Amino acid sequence: MSVLQAAAGDGVGNPPALTEQEAMFRTTMEAAQVGIFVLQDQCFKYVNPYLTRLFGYSAEEMVGHMGPLDVVVPELHAFVIDQMQARAAGISGHHYEITAVRKDGSEFPAMVFGSPSVFDGRPASVGTLLDISWQKAAEQRIRELADYDVLTGLPNRRLLRERFVQLLAAAERDKTEIAVIFLDLDHFKRVNDSLGHSVGDELLVEVARRLDSVVRRIDTLARLGGDEFIFAMPGFHTAAAADVARRLIDVFSRPFEVAGHELTVTPSLGISIYPHDGQDLETLLKNADTAMYRAKDIGRNTFQFYATEMNTATLDRLLMESNLRRALAQNAQNEFVLQYQPLVNLRTGMVIGVEALIRWQHPELGTIMPDSFIHVAEETGLINPIGDWVLCEACRQAKAWCDEGLPSLVMAVNVAPVQFRQPGFIEMVAGALASSGLEASLLELELTERTVMHDADINLGTLSALHRMGVELSLDDFGTGYSSLAYLKRFPVGKLKIDRSFVNDLETDPDDWAIASTIVSMGRSLRMTVLAEGVETGEQLAQLRKMGCDMAQGYYFSRPTSAAGIAEILRVQPFMNR
Ligand code: C2E
Ligand code: MG
Ligand code: MG
Image 1 (cartoon, rainbow, N blue to C red):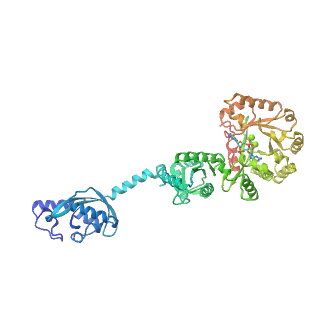
Image 2: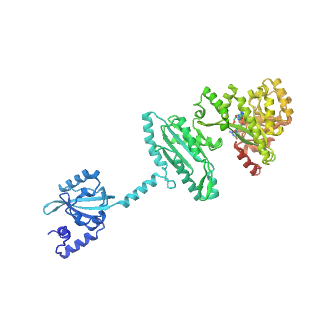
Protein backbone atom coordinates (compact mmCIF):
# COMPACT_ATOMS: atom_id res chain seq x y z
CA MET A 1 0.00 0.00 0.00
CA SER A 2 1.35 3.39 -0.90
CA VAL A 3 1.60 6.22 1.55
CA LEU A 4 -1.22 7.94 -0.19
CA GLN A 5 -3.46 4.91 0.02
CA ALA A 6 -2.63 4.63 3.67
CA ALA A 7 -3.52 8.24 4.22
CA ALA A 8 -6.66 7.92 2.17
CA GLY A 9 -7.78 4.72 3.85
CA ASP A 10 -10.38 3.02 1.75
CA GLY A 11 -12.02 6.27 0.99
CA VAL A 12 -15.12 5.59 3.05
CA GLY A 13 -13.75 6.28 6.47
CA ASN A 14 -12.15 3.05 7.62
CA PRO A 15 -8.58 3.89 8.54
CA PRO A 16 -6.04 1.24 7.61
CA ALA A 17 -3.38 0.06 9.99
CA LEU A 18 -0.75 2.81 10.13
CA THR A 19 2.97 2.78 10.41
CA GLU A 20 4.50 5.69 12.33
CA GLN A 21 5.52 7.40 9.12
CA GLU A 22 2.05 6.97 7.67
CA ALA A 23 0.49 8.42 10.80
CA MET A 24 2.71 11.44 10.54
CA PHE A 25 1.74 11.83 6.91
CA ARG A 26 -1.93 11.61 7.76
CA THR A 27 -1.65 14.20 10.55
CA THR A 28 0.07 16.53 8.13
CA MET A 29 -2.70 16.20 5.58
CA GLU A 30 -5.31 16.83 8.20
CA ALA A 31 -3.59 19.87 9.61
CA ALA A 32 -2.77 21.45 6.24
CA GLN A 33 -4.41 24.89 5.76
CA VAL A 34 -4.79 24.30 2.07
CA GLY A 35 -7.05 21.91 0.20
CA ILE A 36 -5.28 18.81 -1.02
CA PHE A 37 -6.75 16.21 -3.32
CA VAL A 38 -5.87 13.25 -5.50
CA LEU A 39 -7.67 12.76 -8.79
CA GLN A 40 -7.96 9.75 -10.98
CA ASP A 41 -10.37 9.12 -13.84
CA GLN A 42 -11.75 12.64 -13.28
CA CYS A 43 -12.89 11.58 -9.84
CA PHE A 44 -11.61 12.45 -6.34
CA LYS A 45 -9.58 9.63 -4.80
CA TYR A 46 -8.59 11.57 -1.73
CA VAL A 47 -9.61 14.92 -0.21
CA ASN A 48 -8.12 16.36 2.94
CA PRO A 49 -10.32 17.80 5.72
CA TYR A 50 -9.51 21.38 4.77
CA LEU A 51 -10.91 20.80 1.28
CA THR A 52 -14.11 19.19 2.55
CA ARG A 53 -14.64 22.08 4.97
CA LEU A 54 -14.09 24.55 2.16
CA PHE A 55 -16.74 22.96 -0.05
CA GLY A 56 -19.15 21.90 2.67
CA TYR A 57 -19.21 18.25 1.57
CA SER A 58 -18.02 15.29 3.64
CA ALA A 59 -15.11 13.17 2.45
CA GLU A 60 -17.59 10.32 1.93
CA GLU A 61 -19.67 12.45 -0.43
CA MET A 62 -16.68 13.51 -2.44
CA VAL A 63 -14.35 10.58 -2.69
CA GLY A 64 -15.29 8.12 -5.36
CA HIS A 65 -18.47 10.05 -6.21
CA MET A 66 -17.57 13.55 -7.25
CA GLY A 67 -15.05 15.12 -9.56
CA PRO A 68 -13.76 18.63 -10.20
CA LEU A 69 -16.64 19.37 -12.57
CA ASP A 70 -19.02 19.14 -9.63
CA VAL A 71 -17.28 21.92 -7.78
CA VAL A 72 -16.53 24.53 -10.43
CA VAL A 73 -18.89 26.85 -12.32
CA PRO A 74 -20.16 25.40 -15.65
CA GLU A 75 -18.35 28.08 -17.71
CA LEU A 76 -15.05 26.54 -16.63
CA HIS A 77 -15.87 22.89 -17.34
CA ALA A 78 -14.12 22.77 -20.70
CA PHE A 79 -11.04 24.39 -19.24
CA VAL A 80 -10.96 22.03 -16.25
CA ILE A 81 -11.32 19.00 -18.53
CA ASP A 82 -8.34 20.23 -20.55
CA GLN A 83 -6.32 20.54 -17.39
CA MET A 84 -7.23 17.06 -16.19
CA GLN A 85 -6.34 15.55 -19.55
CA ALA A 86 -2.98 17.31 -19.53
CA ARG A 87 -2.17 16.01 -16.05
CA ALA A 88 -3.24 12.50 -17.08
CA ALA A 89 -0.86 12.79 -20.03
CA GLY A 90 1.91 13.58 -17.60
CA ILE A 91 2.19 17.26 -18.46
CA SER A 92 2.77 19.49 -15.45
CA GLY A 93 0.69 22.61 -15.23
CA HIS A 94 0.70 26.13 -13.82
CA HIS A 95 -1.32 27.71 -11.10
CA TYR A 96 -4.70 28.64 -12.38
CA GLU A 97 -7.72 30.42 -10.96
CA ILE A 98 -11.19 28.95 -10.89
CA THR A 99 -14.56 29.95 -9.52
CA ALA A 100 -15.40 27.11 -7.16
CA VAL A 101 -18.93 26.16 -6.10
CA ARG A 102 -19.76 25.02 -2.56
CA LYS A 103 -22.37 22.45 -1.68
CA ASP A 104 -24.80 25.27 -0.83
CA GLY A 105 -24.30 26.76 -4.32
CA SER A 106 -22.25 29.73 -3.16
CA GLU A 107 -19.12 30.53 -5.12
CA PHE A 108 -15.60 31.52 -4.20
CA PRO A 109 -12.42 32.19 -6.12
CA ALA A 110 -9.72 29.55 -5.75
CA MET A 111 -6.20 28.99 -6.96
CA VAL A 112 -5.42 25.41 -8.07
CA PHE A 113 -2.15 23.71 -8.76
CA GLY A 114 -2.06 20.14 -10.05
CA SER A 115 0.89 17.89 -10.82
CA PRO A 116 0.83 14.57 -12.63
CA SER A 117 1.30 11.51 -10.54
CA VAL A 118 0.72 7.76 -10.67
CA PHE A 119 -1.67 5.88 -8.48
CA ASP A 120 -2.05 2.11 -8.58
CA GLY A 121 0.10 2.09 -11.67
CA ARG A 122 -2.29 4.35 -13.53
CA PRO A 123 -2.07 8.12 -14.24
CA ALA A 124 -3.42 10.35 -11.55
CA SER A 125 -2.80 13.86 -10.31
CA VAL A 126 -2.21 15.47 -6.97
CA GLY A 127 -3.56 18.95 -6.49
CA THR A 128 -3.72 21.76 -4.02
CA LEU A 129 -6.48 24.32 -3.82
CA LEU A 130 -6.38 27.69 -2.04
CA ASP A 131 -9.34 29.91 -1.22
CA ILE A 132 -8.27 33.32 -2.53
CA SER A 133 -11.39 35.34 -1.60
CA TRP A 134 -9.37 37.54 0.68
CA GLN A 135 -6.75 38.37 -1.95
CA LYS A 136 -9.49 39.04 -4.49
CA ALA A 137 -11.25 41.43 -2.13
CA ALA A 138 -7.96 43.23 -1.50
CA GLU A 139 -7.28 43.45 -5.22
CA GLN A 140 -10.76 44.83 -5.79
CA ARG A 141 -10.22 47.42 -3.08
CA ILE A 142 -6.91 48.44 -4.61
CA ARG A 143 -8.58 48.76 -7.98
CA GLU A 144 -11.30 50.87 -6.40
CA LEU A 145 -8.78 53.06 -4.68
CA ALA A 146 -7.03 53.57 -7.96
CA ASP A 147 -10.22 54.27 -9.92
CA TYR A 148 -12.71 55.72 -7.49
CA ASP A 149 -12.84 58.70 -5.22
CA VAL A 150 -12.69 57.46 -1.64
CA LEU A 151 -15.12 60.03 -0.24
CA THR A 152 -18.00 59.83 -2.72
CA GLY A 153 -17.33 56.51 -4.44
CA LEU A 154 -17.54 58.28 -7.81
CA PRO A 155 -15.02 57.54 -10.57
CA ASN A 156 -11.87 59.62 -10.22
CA ARG A 157 -9.82 61.38 -12.88
CA ARG A 158 -7.98 58.17 -13.78
CA LEU A 159 -11.13 56.21 -14.50
CA LEU A 160 -12.71 59.19 -16.26
CA ARG A 161 -9.69 59.33 -18.56
CA GLU A 162 -9.91 55.61 -19.23
CA ARG A 163 -13.63 55.75 -20.05
CA PHE A 164 -13.19 58.86 -22.14
CA VAL A 165 -10.87 57.01 -24.49
CA GLN A 166 -13.76 54.70 -25.30
CA LEU A 167 -16.26 57.54 -25.55
CA LEU A 168 -14.00 59.36 -27.99
CA ALA A 169 -13.52 56.28 -30.16
CA ALA A 170 -17.29 55.77 -30.36
CA ALA A 171 -18.02 59.45 -31.00
CA GLU A 172 -15.42 59.58 -33.75
CA ARG A 173 -16.83 56.47 -35.38
CA ASP A 174 -20.48 57.55 -35.14
CA LYS A 175 -19.80 61.25 -35.77
CA THR A 176 -21.60 62.16 -32.56
CA GLU A 177 -20.90 64.77 -29.92
CA ILE A 178 -19.89 64.47 -26.29
CA ALA A 179 -20.74 67.10 -23.71
CA VAL A 180 -18.24 67.67 -20.91
CA ILE A 181 -19.75 69.55 -18.00
CA PHE A 182 -17.59 71.00 -15.26
CA LEU A 183 -19.53 71.64 -12.06
CA ASP A 184 -18.08 73.56 -9.14
CA LEU A 185 -19.92 74.46 -5.96
CA ASP A 186 -20.19 78.16 -5.21
CA HIS A 187 -18.52 79.29 -1.98
CA PHE A 188 -17.88 75.72 -0.85
CA LYS A 189 -14.91 76.98 1.11
CA ARG A 190 -17.29 78.88 3.38
CA VAL A 191 -18.90 75.61 4.44
CA ASN A 192 -15.52 74.10 5.27
CA ASP A 193 -14.34 77.22 7.05
CA SER A 194 -17.44 77.79 9.11
CA LEU A 195 -18.69 74.27 9.84
CA GLY A 196 -15.54 72.20 9.52
CA HIS A 197 -14.21 69.76 6.98
CA SER A 198 -16.24 66.80 8.13
CA VAL A 199 -19.48 68.69 7.43
CA GLY A 200 -17.98 69.77 4.11
CA ASP A 201 -17.21 66.13 3.32
CA GLU A 202 -20.71 65.00 4.19
CA LEU A 203 -22.13 67.72 2.00
CA LEU A 204 -19.99 66.51 -0.91
CA VAL A 205 -21.28 62.97 -0.43
CA GLU A 206 -24.87 64.23 -0.49
CA VAL A 207 -24.22 66.38 -3.54
CA ALA A 208 -22.62 63.41 -5.32
CA ARG A 209 -25.64 61.26 -4.53
CA ARG A 210 -28.08 63.80 -5.93
CA LEU A 211 -26.01 64.48 -9.03
CA ASP A 212 -25.69 60.78 -9.67
CA SER A 213 -29.47 60.51 -9.83
CA VAL A 214 -29.62 62.87 -12.80
CA VAL A 215 -27.18 61.12 -15.11
CA ARG A 216 -27.89 58.22 -17.44
CA ARG A 217 -26.10 54.89 -17.13
CA ILE A 218 -23.87 55.64 -20.07
CA ASP A 219 -22.76 58.95 -18.62
CA THR A 220 -19.75 59.20 -16.37
CA LEU A 221 -19.94 61.39 -13.32
CA ALA A 222 -16.50 61.81 -11.79
CA ARG A 223 -15.11 63.82 -8.92
CA LEU A 224 -11.84 65.55 -9.65
CA GLY A 225 -11.25 66.43 -6.02
CA GLY A 226 -12.39 69.32 -3.89
CA ASP A 227 -15.81 70.47 -4.93
CA GLU A 228 -15.28 69.81 -8.63
CA PHE A 229 -17.43 67.32 -10.49
CA ILE A 230 -17.22 66.32 -14.14
CA PHE A 231 -19.89 64.85 -16.36
CA ALA A 232 -18.96 63.13 -19.59
CA MET A 233 -22.12 62.66 -21.62
CA PRO A 234 -21.96 60.97 -25.00
CA GLY A 235 -24.42 61.80 -27.75
CA PHE A 236 -25.20 65.25 -26.39
CA HIS A 237 -25.57 68.32 -28.56
CA THR A 238 -25.82 71.90 -27.37
CA ALA A 239 -29.52 72.08 -26.57
CA ALA A 240 -29.52 68.75 -24.75
CA ALA A 241 -26.47 69.74 -22.74
CA ALA A 242 -28.19 72.97 -21.74
CA ASP A 243 -31.16 70.92 -20.67
CA VAL A 244 -29.08 68.69 -18.41
CA ALA A 245 -27.22 71.68 -17.02
CA ARG A 246 -30.52 73.17 -15.99
CA ARG A 247 -31.56 69.93 -14.34
CA LEU A 248 -28.24 69.80 -12.50
CA ILE A 249 -28.82 73.30 -11.19
CA ASP A 250 -32.33 72.25 -10.12
CA VAL A 251 -30.78 69.50 -8.03
CA PHE A 252 -29.53 72.27 -5.73
CA SER A 253 -32.87 74.02 -5.33
CA ARG A 254 -33.66 72.05 -2.16
CA PRO A 255 -31.31 72.57 0.78
CA PHE A 256 -29.03 69.74 1.87
CA GLU A 257 -29.45 68.34 5.35
CA VAL A 258 -26.03 67.64 6.71
CA ALA A 259 -25.11 66.99 10.33
CA GLY A 260 -28.19 68.80 11.59
CA HIS A 261 -27.61 71.81 9.34
CA GLU A 262 -29.76 72.89 6.44
CA LEU A 263 -27.23 73.94 3.86
CA THR A 264 -28.08 75.79 0.69
CA VAL A 265 -25.41 75.62 -1.97
CA THR A 266 -25.48 76.56 -5.61
CA PRO A 267 -23.32 75.34 -8.48
CA SER A 268 -21.62 77.02 -11.41
CA LEU A 269 -21.30 74.96 -14.57
CA GLY A 270 -19.19 75.19 -17.68
CA ILE A 271 -19.83 73.12 -20.79
CA SER A 272 -17.52 72.13 -23.61
CA ILE A 273 -18.59 70.00 -26.53
CA TYR A 274 -16.54 67.46 -28.47
CA PRO A 275 -15.46 67.93 -31.24
CA HIS A 276 -16.25 71.65 -31.37
CA ASP A 277 -14.30 72.72 -28.29
CA GLY A 278 -11.54 70.14 -28.21
CA GLN A 279 -10.42 66.76 -29.47
CA ASP A 280 -9.18 65.27 -26.22
CA LEU A 281 -10.23 65.14 -22.61
CA GLU A 282 -7.59 67.53 -21.31
CA THR A 283 -8.58 70.30 -23.73
CA LEU A 284 -12.28 69.73 -23.16
CA LEU A 285 -11.78 69.85 -19.39
CA LYS A 286 -9.70 73.01 -19.60
CA ASN A 287 -12.33 74.71 -21.75
CA ALA A 288 -15.24 73.56 -19.61
CA ASP A 289 -13.30 74.96 -16.65
CA THR A 290 -12.92 78.32 -18.40
CA ALA A 291 -16.65 78.38 -19.12
CA MET A 292 -17.36 77.48 -15.50
CA TYR A 293 -15.40 80.54 -14.36
CA ARG A 294 -17.41 82.63 -16.75
CA ALA A 295 -20.57 81.28 -15.10
CA LYS A 296 -19.12 82.36 -11.74
CA ASP A 297 -18.33 85.79 -13.17
CA ILE A 298 -21.85 86.41 -14.29
CA GLY A 299 -23.29 85.70 -10.89
CA ARG A 300 -23.02 81.93 -10.18
CA ASN A 301 -25.81 79.35 -9.99
CA THR A 302 -25.84 79.20 -13.77
CA PHE A 303 -24.07 77.60 -16.70
CA GLN A 304 -22.10 78.78 -19.69
CA PHE A 305 -20.88 77.14 -22.85
CA TYR A 306 -17.19 77.41 -23.63
CA ALA A 307 -17.93 78.60 -27.13
CA THR A 308 -19.58 81.86 -26.16
CA GLU A 309 -21.41 81.97 -29.41
CA MET A 310 -23.21 78.81 -28.29
CA ASN A 311 -24.80 80.87 -25.55
CA THR A 312 -26.33 82.88 -28.33
CA ALA A 313 -25.32 81.24 -31.57
CA THR A 314 -27.99 78.64 -31.79
CA LEU A 315 -30.04 81.76 -31.81
CA ASP A 316 -29.34 83.46 -35.08
CA ARG A 317 -30.70 86.95 -35.58
CA LEU A 318 -34.22 85.98 -36.42
CA LEU A 319 -34.42 83.40 -33.71
CA MET A 320 -32.93 85.85 -31.28
CA GLU A 321 -35.66 88.30 -32.12
CA SER A 322 -38.48 85.80 -31.63
CA ASN A 323 -36.81 84.57 -28.47
CA LEU A 324 -36.61 88.09 -27.14
CA ARG A 325 -40.28 88.57 -27.89
CA ARG A 326 -41.13 85.35 -26.12
CA ALA A 327 -39.00 86.31 -23.14
CA LEU A 328 -40.69 89.68 -22.96
CA ALA A 329 -44.12 88.13 -23.14
CA GLN A 330 -43.21 85.73 -20.36
CA ASN A 331 -41.31 87.95 -18.08
CA ALA A 332 -43.71 86.76 -15.49
CA GLN A 333 -41.33 83.79 -15.54
CA ASN A 334 -38.39 86.07 -15.01
CA GLU A 335 -36.21 85.39 -17.99
CA PHE A 336 -34.83 88.89 -17.61
CA VAL A 337 -33.22 89.68 -14.31
CA LEU A 338 -31.27 92.60 -12.99
CA GLN A 339 -28.00 92.48 -11.16
CA TYR A 340 -26.52 95.42 -9.35
CA GLN A 341 -22.95 96.62 -9.12
CA PRO A 342 -21.89 98.99 -6.34
CA LEU A 343 -20.71 102.52 -7.11
CA VAL A 344 -18.16 103.50 -4.50
CA ASN A 345 -17.25 106.96 -3.23
CA LEU A 346 -13.46 106.99 -3.16
CA ARG A 347 -13.21 109.57 -0.41
CA THR A 348 -15.30 107.64 2.11
CA GLY A 349 -15.11 104.13 0.71
CA MET A 350 -18.89 103.87 0.99
CA VAL A 351 -21.28 102.46 -1.57
CA ILE A 352 -23.47 105.37 -2.57
CA GLY A 353 -25.21 103.82 -5.51
CA VAL A 354 -25.54 100.81 -7.77
CA GLU A 355 -25.76 100.29 -11.50
CA ALA A 356 -28.53 98.01 -12.73
CA LEU A 357 -27.27 95.51 -15.34
CA ILE A 358 -29.60 93.23 -17.20
CA ARG A 359 -29.10 89.48 -17.72
CA TRP A 360 -31.21 87.21 -19.85
CA GLN A 361 -31.68 83.76 -18.38
CA HIS A 362 -32.56 81.83 -21.47
CA PRO A 363 -34.25 78.52 -20.67
CA GLU A 364 -32.00 76.61 -23.05
CA LEU A 365 -28.89 78.66 -23.39
CA GLY A 366 -28.22 79.76 -19.86
CA THR A 367 -27.35 83.29 -18.95
CA ILE A 368 -26.91 85.60 -21.91
CA MET A 369 -25.01 88.82 -21.23
CA PRO A 370 -26.32 92.18 -22.44
CA ASP A 371 -23.50 92.66 -24.95
CA SER A 372 -24.89 89.62 -26.81
CA PHE A 373 -28.49 90.75 -27.14
CA ILE A 374 -28.85 94.47 -26.49
CA HIS A 375 -27.77 95.33 -30.04
CA VAL A 376 -30.41 93.01 -31.52
CA ALA A 377 -32.95 94.49 -29.15
CA GLU A 378 -31.93 97.95 -30.32
CA GLU A 379 -32.14 97.07 -33.99
CA THR A 380 -35.56 95.49 -33.65
CA GLY A 381 -37.00 98.16 -31.39
CA LEU A 382 -37.50 95.58 -28.66
CA ILE A 383 -35.17 97.66 -26.51
CA ASN A 384 -38.12 99.90 -25.70
CA PRO A 385 -40.23 97.37 -23.83
CA ILE A 386 -37.07 95.79 -22.37
CA GLY A 387 -35.77 99.18 -21.25
CA ASP A 388 -39.16 100.06 -19.77
CA TRP A 389 -39.11 96.88 -17.77
CA VAL A 390 -35.55 97.57 -16.54
CA LEU A 391 -36.48 101.07 -15.48
CA CYS A 392 -39.57 99.98 -13.55
CA GLU A 393 -37.84 97.02 -11.94
CA ALA A 394 -34.80 99.08 -10.93
CA CYS A 395 -36.98 101.79 -9.38
CA ARG A 396 -39.03 99.19 -7.57
CA GLN A 397 -35.88 97.60 -6.14
CA ALA A 398 -34.38 100.93 -5.10
CA LYS A 399 -37.56 101.82 -3.26
CA ALA A 400 -37.65 98.39 -1.64
CA TRP A 401 -34.13 98.97 -0.25
CA CYS A 402 -35.25 102.33 1.13
CA ASP A 403 -38.25 100.68 2.74
CA GLU A 404 -35.98 98.04 4.29
CA GLY A 405 -34.17 100.86 6.01
CA LEU A 406 -30.95 100.47 4.05
CA PRO A 407 -28.95 103.65 3.40
CA SER A 408 -30.30 105.51 0.34
CA LEU A 409 -28.63 104.36 -2.84
CA VAL A 410 -28.65 106.02 -6.21
CA MET A 411 -29.97 103.61 -8.82
CA ALA A 412 -28.14 104.01 -12.12
CA VAL A 413 -29.98 102.65 -15.15
CA ASN A 414 -28.54 102.29 -18.66
CA VAL A 415 -30.60 103.87 -21.40
CA ALA A 416 -30.08 102.85 -25.01
CA PRO A 417 -30.07 105.57 -27.70
CA VAL A 418 -33.27 104.30 -29.35
CA GLN A 419 -35.00 104.20 -26.03
CA PHE A 420 -33.92 107.70 -25.14
CA ARG A 421 -35.24 109.02 -28.42
CA GLN A 422 -38.57 107.23 -28.36
CA PRO A 423 -41.55 109.53 -28.01
CA GLY A 424 -42.88 109.50 -24.51
CA PHE A 425 -39.59 108.61 -22.85
CA ILE A 426 -39.93 111.38 -20.28
CA GLU A 427 -43.43 110.22 -19.37
CA MET A 428 -42.13 106.69 -19.13
CA VAL A 429 -39.51 107.76 -16.57
CA ALA A 430 -42.04 109.79 -14.64
CA GLY A 431 -44.36 106.77 -14.61
CA ALA A 432 -41.65 104.45 -13.26
CA LEU A 433 -40.90 106.90 -10.46
CA ALA A 434 -44.56 107.42 -9.63
CA SER A 435 -45.51 103.76 -9.56
CA SER A 436 -42.52 102.80 -7.42
CA GLY A 437 -42.64 105.82 -5.18
CA LEU A 438 -38.90 106.36 -5.61
CA GLU A 439 -37.55 109.85 -5.12
CA ALA A 440 -36.38 111.26 -8.48
CA SER A 441 -32.99 112.25 -7.09
CA LEU A 442 -32.25 108.58 -6.41
CA LEU A 443 -32.55 107.69 -10.09
CA GLU A 444 -29.64 108.25 -12.44
CA LEU A 445 -29.87 107.59 -16.16
CA GLU A 446 -26.69 106.48 -17.92
CA LEU A 447 -26.44 107.72 -21.48
CA THR A 448 -23.57 107.31 -23.86
CA GLU A 449 -21.85 110.14 -25.70
CA ARG A 450 -23.19 108.60 -28.87
CA THR A 451 -26.74 109.04 -27.53
CA VAL A 452 -26.57 112.63 -26.46
CA MET A 453 -24.22 114.13 -29.03
CA HIS A 454 -26.34 112.85 -31.90
CA ASP A 455 -28.85 115.63 -32.64
CA ALA A 456 -27.54 117.37 -29.58
CA ASP A 457 -29.99 120.24 -29.80
CA ILE A 458 -33.04 117.99 -29.76
CA ASN A 459 -31.57 115.93 -26.94
CA LEU A 460 -30.88 118.99 -24.90
CA GLY A 461 -34.64 119.41 -24.52
CA THR A 462 -35.16 115.88 -23.21
CA LEU A 463 -32.15 116.11 -20.92
CA SER A 464 -33.34 119.38 -19.47
CA ALA A 465 -36.82 118.01 -18.86
CA LEU A 466 -35.41 115.00 -17.02
CA HIS A 467 -33.12 117.27 -15.06
CA ARG A 468 -36.05 119.45 -14.02
CA MET A 469 -37.80 116.32 -12.73
CA GLY A 470 -34.83 115.88 -10.41
CA VAL A 471 -33.39 112.83 -12.20
CA GLU A 472 -29.57 112.57 -12.32
CA LEU A 473 -27.80 112.08 -15.63
CA SER A 474 -24.42 110.56 -16.39
CA LEU A 475 -22.32 109.94 -19.47
CA ASP A 476 -21.36 106.27 -19.76
CA ASP A 477 -18.27 104.81 -21.46
CA PHE A 478 -16.82 108.29 -21.53
CA GLY A 479 -13.80 108.73 -23.77
CA THR A 480 -14.81 106.19 -26.41
CA GLY A 481 -17.13 108.44 -28.39
CA TYR A 482 -16.71 112.01 -29.38
CA SER A 483 -17.85 114.81 -27.19
CA SER A 484 -18.14 118.41 -27.93
CA LEU A 485 -16.89 120.36 -24.98
CA ALA A 486 -19.30 123.11 -25.85
CA TYR A 487 -22.27 120.78 -25.43
CA LEU A 488 -20.79 119.04 -22.45
CA LYS A 489 -20.84 122.40 -20.69
CA ARG A 490 -24.47 123.03 -21.59
CA PHE A 491 -25.85 119.57 -20.85
CA PRO A 492 -27.23 119.06 -17.37
CA VAL A 493 -25.06 115.99 -16.92
CA GLY A 494 -23.66 115.51 -13.45
CA LYS A 495 -21.29 112.60 -13.90
CA LEU A 496 -18.71 111.20 -16.33
CA LYS A 497 -17.94 107.48 -16.29
CA ILE A 498 -14.42 106.79 -17.56
CA ASP A 499 -14.66 103.79 -19.86
CA ARG A 500 -13.07 100.69 -18.45
CA SER A 501 -10.76 100.30 -21.44
CA PHE A 502 -8.71 103.23 -20.08
CA VAL A 503 -8.71 101.92 -16.54
CA ASN A 504 -7.60 98.49 -17.63
CA ASP A 505 -4.04 99.46 -18.59
CA LEU A 506 -3.69 102.42 -16.31
CA GLU A 507 -0.48 101.08 -14.78
CA THR A 508 1.22 100.10 -18.00
CA ASP A 509 -0.04 102.40 -20.72
CA PRO A 510 0.98 106.05 -20.30
CA ASP A 511 -1.60 107.13 -22.91
CA ASP A 512 -4.43 105.55 -20.95
CA TRP A 513 -3.10 107.15 -17.81
CA ALA A 514 -3.05 110.55 -19.56
CA ILE A 515 -6.62 110.12 -20.88
CA ALA A 516 -7.97 109.07 -17.50
CA SER A 517 -6.31 111.91 -15.66
CA THR A 518 -7.42 114.41 -18.31
CA ILE A 519 -11.03 113.27 -17.90
CA VAL A 520 -10.69 113.63 -14.14
CA SER A 521 -9.40 117.19 -14.33
CA MET A 522 -11.85 118.14 -17.06
CA GLY A 523 -14.71 116.75 -14.98
CA ARG A 524 -13.52 118.69 -12.00
CA SER A 525 -13.32 121.98 -13.89
CA LEU A 526 -16.85 121.39 -15.26
CA ARG A 527 -17.98 120.59 -11.71
CA MET A 528 -18.94 117.06 -12.64
CA THR A 529 -18.40 113.89 -10.65
CA VAL A 530 -15.99 111.46 -12.29
CA LEU A 531 -16.39 107.71 -11.85
CA ALA A 532 -13.89 105.12 -13.10
CA GLU A 533 -15.41 101.89 -14.47
CA GLY A 534 -13.81 98.47 -14.38
CA VAL A 535 -11.45 98.89 -11.41
CA GLU A 536 -10.01 95.46 -10.79
CA THR A 537 -6.84 96.01 -8.78
CA GLY A 538 -5.69 97.95 -5.77
CA GLU A 539 -2.97 99.52 -7.91
CA GLN A 540 -5.53 100.93 -10.38
CA LEU A 541 -7.50 102.25 -7.44
CA ALA A 542 -4.41 103.93 -5.96
CA GLN A 543 -3.63 105.63 -9.29
CA LEU A 544 -7.21 106.87 -9.64
CA ARG A 545 -7.25 108.28 -6.14
CA LYS A 546 -3.99 110.03 -6.83
CA MET A 547 -5.61 111.67 -9.88
CA GLY A 548 -8.46 112.83 -7.69
CA CYS A 549 -11.13 110.60 -9.23
CA ASP A 550 -14.32 110.80 -7.16
CA MET A 551 -15.91 107.42 -7.61
CA ALA A 552 -15.23 103.94 -8.90
CA GLN A 553 -16.95 100.72 -9.85
CA GLY A 554 -15.41 97.38 -10.63
CA TYR A 555 -14.61 93.82 -9.65
CA TYR A 556 -12.17 95.15 -7.08
CA PHE A 557 -15.16 96.14 -4.96
CA SER A 558 -17.76 93.72 -6.23
CA ARG A 559 -19.00 92.00 -9.31
CA PRO A 560 -22.58 92.69 -10.32
CA THR A 561 -24.70 90.76 -7.85
CA SER A 562 -28.29 90.09 -6.82
CA ALA A 563 -30.37 92.51 -4.75
CA ALA A 564 -29.75 90.31 -1.72
CA GLY A 565 -26.01 90.43 -2.47
CA ILE A 566 -26.11 94.22 -2.34
CA ALA A 567 -27.76 94.18 1.07
CA GLU A 568 -24.93 91.93 2.25
CA ILE A 569 -22.30 94.26 0.80
CA LEU A 570 -23.79 97.26 2.57
CA ARG A 571 -23.06 95.47 5.81
CA VAL A 572 -19.31 95.08 5.14
CA GLN A 573 -18.49 98.51 3.77
CA PRO A 574 -16.62 100.82 3.81
CA PHE A 575 -14.46 99.09 1.24
CA MET A 576 -11.40 101.17 1.48
CA ASN A 577 -10.44 100.61 5.07
CA ARG A 578 -10.52 96.86 4.76
P1 C2E B 1 -21.77 99.43 -18.98
O1 C2E B 1 -22.96 100.27 -18.75
O2 C2E B 1 -20.49 100.11 -19.26
O3 C2E B 1 -21.65 98.50 -17.69
C1 C2E B 1 -20.46 98.13 -17.12
C2 C2E B 1 -20.04 96.79 -17.62
O4 C2E B 1 -18.74 96.54 -17.14
C3 C2E B 1 -20.91 95.65 -17.08
O5 C2E B 1 -20.93 94.64 -18.05
C4 C2E B 1 -20.10 95.20 -15.88
O6 C2E B 1 -20.36 93.87 -15.51
C5 C2E B 1 -18.70 95.34 -16.41
N1 C2E B 1 -17.74 95.50 -15.35
C6 C2E B 1 -17.89 96.10 -14.16
N2 C2E B 1 -16.76 96.06 -13.44
C7 C2E B 1 -15.85 95.44 -14.18
C8 C2E B 1 -14.46 95.08 -13.98
O7 C2E B 1 -13.85 95.36 -12.96
N3 C2E B 1 -13.84 94.43 -15.01
C9 C2E B 1 -14.49 94.11 -16.16
N4 C2E B 1 -13.81 93.46 -17.10
N5 C2E B 1 -15.79 94.41 -16.38
C10 C2E B 1 -16.46 95.07 -15.40
P2 C2E B 1 -22.27 93.94 -18.50
O8 C2E B 1 -23.15 93.76 -17.33
O9 C2E B 1 -21.88 92.80 -19.33
O10 C2E B 1 -22.96 95.02 -19.38
C11 C2E B 1 -22.42 95.38 -20.58
C12 C2E B 1 -23.12 96.55 -21.16
O11 C2E B 1 -24.45 96.23 -21.54
C13 C2E B 1 -23.25 97.71 -20.21
O12 C2E B 1 -22.04 98.41 -20.17
C14 C2E B 1 -24.38 98.49 -20.83
O13 C2E B 1 -23.92 99.27 -21.88
C15 C2E B 1 -25.23 97.39 -21.42
N6 C2E B 1 -26.38 97.14 -20.53
C16 C2E B 1 -26.43 96.42 -19.39
N7 C2E B 1 -27.66 96.44 -18.87
C17 C2E B 1 -28.40 97.23 -19.67
C18 C2E B 1 -29.77 97.67 -19.67
O14 C2E B 1 -30.56 97.35 -18.76
N8 C2E B 1 -30.19 98.46 -20.70
C19 C2E B 1 -29.33 98.85 -21.69
N9 C2E B 1 -29.79 99.62 -22.66
N10 C2E B 1 -28.05 98.46 -21.72
C20 C2E B 1 -27.59 97.68 -20.74
MG1 MG C 1 -23.53 101.69 -17.66
MG1 MG D 1 -19.78 101.73 -19.08
